Every structure is written in C-alpha cells, then in structure tokens.
Amino acid sequence: MNILILGGGGREHALAWAVMQNPKCDKLIVAPGNAGIAAIATCAALDIEDGGAVAQFAEAEAIDMVIVGPEAPLAAGVADRLRDAGLLVFGPSKSAARLEASKSFTKEICYAAKAPTAGYAHFTDLEAAKTYVRAQGAPIVVKADGLAAGKGVIIAETVAQAEAALDDMFGGEFGAAGAEVVIEEFMTGEEASFFVLVDGEAVLPIGTAQDHKRIGEGDTGPNTGGMGAYSPAPVMTDAVTQKALDEIVRPTMAEMARRGMPYQGVLYVGLMIENGQPRLVEYNVRFGDPECQVLMMRLGAQAFDLMHACADGRLEEAQVNWADDHAMTVVLAASGYPGAYQKGTEIKGLEALAADASNMVFHAGTKAEGGKVLANGGRVLNATARGATLQEARDRAYALVDGVDWTDGVHRRDIGWRAL
Ligand code: AMP
Ligand code: GLY
Image (cartoon, rainbow, N blue to C red; front, side):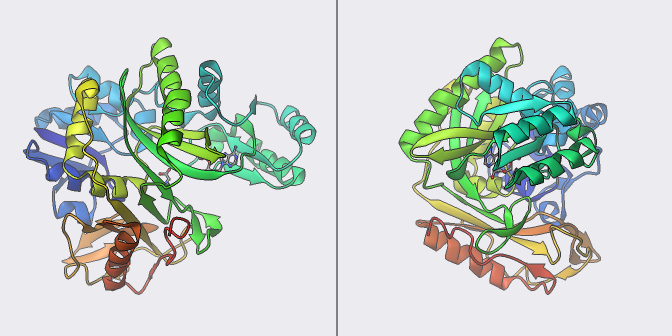
C-alpha cells in the first residue's frame, strides 16, 4: 500500500517508524516531515490543512491510505475531503473532531451519555461567568472553549485568579477560542491517558500512558506540550480500564453515532482517577505527543494493521498482540522552551546512537541543512526506549539522552518518577 502521513513532529516520526516496519507498506510519504523522518521516508512540502491540496497530492502519488497526525487538519475537515475522494483515512470527520475542538460540545455529549466527568457550566457572557465563579468558589477550572494549543486551561486557586482568567479569555487572549468559556469543577486524583481506536462502532483499546506536562523536575513550572511519557500507566488497572470503557468511552461513542457523527480514528481519553473511579478530563481526536512515541515503540509493525482495520471499518476482527513490556520517552527541548527559544543550533552524535526495535531517538522539531541536523522547534528530540521493566526502559532512554551532543538542549531527569 501507498501511505501518506500528515504532520512533522515526534508523533509522526514514531508513526512513520512503525508503518515502515510493516511489509504491507510499499511507499511512505510524510508531509511535511522533519530531518529524522527524511531518513526513513519521503518528505513532501504540503499545506496539510488544505483538504483539496492534500487530496490532489494523494491522487498524484497514488496514495491508498492517509494517517492524520495532528488535530488542526481534522478540525479543518481534511479527513472528510479525503474520504469524499475515495481514500482510506485514519482520523475523524470535522463534526466528530469537535470532541477536541469544542470543550462545551464534549461536556454536552458526556451529559447526554451519562459519562462521569467534572460538573460544568458554559458561558458566552463575562458577567454571568463571574457571577457563577463567585457562587462556586475556588479551586475552579476555567477553559477557553476552542482549540488553544494546550494553553486555554487555567486551574484557578482563588476566585480572583478565575476572574482574571475570564477577563483574559473574554478580552480575546485566545482569539475566537475564548469567545466561549467552560467553567469546571476542580477534580482531584491521578491522571492517565487511555488510547482506543474507534471505527464508528467497534472500540479497541491499544494502550495507556502517563505524561509529564510541566517543564521542571518534580512536575513544577509552566505547562508544556509534554516533557516525557511512559506506558503502561500503572493507575490504569484492568478494573479502571473496564470502567472507563463501559461508563465513558462506549456510551459517548454510541451518542456520537446516534447523532449522525460516528467517530473514526484514535481517541485520546484523558482521565482523572480517584478511588478506582475514572472521570473524563478531556478527549483529543489524535494520538498524544509524546504519548504516541511510547505506544508505537510497544506496538511496532502491528500498529499499521490496527490503523488500517480502523480506517476500513474492520476493527471488530482486529486484535492487539500485547507484549508484557514497558516504554519511556524523554523529550529534549531547546533551552527557554516553553518560552522563547533559539532555532538553528546544531545537534551532533545522533548517528552513533542505538536505533533498533527497543531504542529510537525520534525527531520532533529538526531540519537537515548542509549535512547537519539543526534544532527547528521547542521540543526537538524524543529519546525513546523499551524494556522488560519500566526501570530498564528508563535506563535505555537516558542512555540515548546522554549520547546526544547538543549544547542548547535541556531535558528532565525524572521522567516516570511516580511509577518508579
Ligand atoms: P485539558 O486541556 O482539558 O486536558 O486540560 C489540561 C490539564 O488541566 C489536564 O491535563 C489536567 O491536568 C488539568 N485539568 C483540566 N480540567 C481539570 C479539572 N476539571 N480538574 C482538575 N484538573 C483539570
Ligand atoms: N501530550 C499531550 C497531548 O498530546 O495533548
């Protein structure tokens, strides 16, 4: 098969790495890709949020199946456009992608499906929102309704902080994403990410992970896109997993189908677990980044068969071959991230590192120039490894980190501390 992956981060490098191992893959193109992806597949410059342009490119390249990495093309309706063109697509329609693109939509679906989640209220008016916050008290969570690149969530410790967040959001800090606001009850517990494939009807769990969102060790400092992750998540016991499927995932997916917007693709289920009870924090309509890197390392070549069955509506007959293993990824970021950082610094030493079924440095934000690999983003590399235990995966991942020669790079030394 000829396969096109949309995206150019560490998530897409890991997806490309898994797809390339599958003998069903004849040709792989990644758009736009990055320096690491270019070493294993063809990269193409393409506006991946322009469905017409992607469809035209896919036709010219005789593509059979498209795997959509990030949420922006999904929210823009690229999957619909490609399906209309007769392609197999791994990724939900624009209307189903609202599960990530609109927080109030997700809350409404949860309410209709009786899925456990934080209590909430939805506002389009600043004064009404402030009155509600004063009545509820703190801590309380204020969220911009739309896509805000992970920055639209404020955990307010005091009513004054919540009011300030509301002033910012209604004041336009998040653009159109903040014109509507969701205010939620603050949930306590331990967070985990649960990944399932959905083909409109059938639901297939493919793994669990935990990530570290803060920049600093001990989970301190500003939020980032994720500084590291590991899989599986110990808090996702069989009982919690079953509850999450029965009480949250299946009822909400049935509600989506009932409303005429069946979900197709990977569903990222963000959960808060307390006393064995999972509650939904959020849905994302794509793989997590860097959670995808640990999932791909554990699934290997079968990941493509699973995504293919999902895109083809054959999930019912698909099966995951679990290995009793663990994986960890450590993010190397440009110093200054998530604030201002430099681009273009040189990264050396990558060729000497192990690159096999248990050790891979995925590229998240790099570019090749004049035979050199240059940093080209905030999160730049994902040192990823697998082992029989989490400790073994950790030791291998940090051996990769320590082999990278990049003076501008920073990383956390404590990924996985909760589980170790
Ligand atoms: P979201 O973008 O909705 O996933 O929110 C980002 C992060 O904020 C989550 O991963 C949680 O750590 C935290 N968070 C979001 N909603 C809540 C809530 N209702 N209670 C506690 N923490 C939350
Ligand atoms: N690592 C969090 C996310 O991908 O949303």
